[in-house]
Length: 87
Image (cartoon, rainbow, N blue to C red; front, side):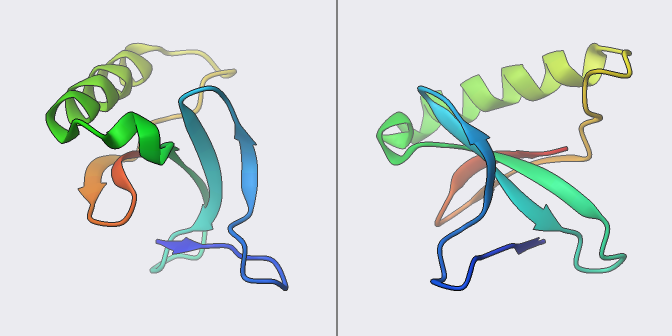
C-alpha cells in the first residue's frame, strides 16, 4: 500500500479520533483508493493488546453487511504503524 502525503510530506488522513487515525492510501498493484486504520503511538505501547484490539475490530467490521460500513480487505501489523485494518 502507498500512503498518500501532502506537499510537506505529512500523511493525508480521512480522519482521526481518540485512539486511532484513518490514513488515505492506495493499493500498490491496482492503484485503487483504500483507507488504513492505525492506532496512535500511545495506543500501541502494549503490542499484544493493540493487536488483539485491532483484530477484534477487524472481525466485527468484516461481519457487518451494510453499504455504510466499509469492507475489510486486510488485517496486519507493521513495524512503523503497528496493527492496521485496510478498508
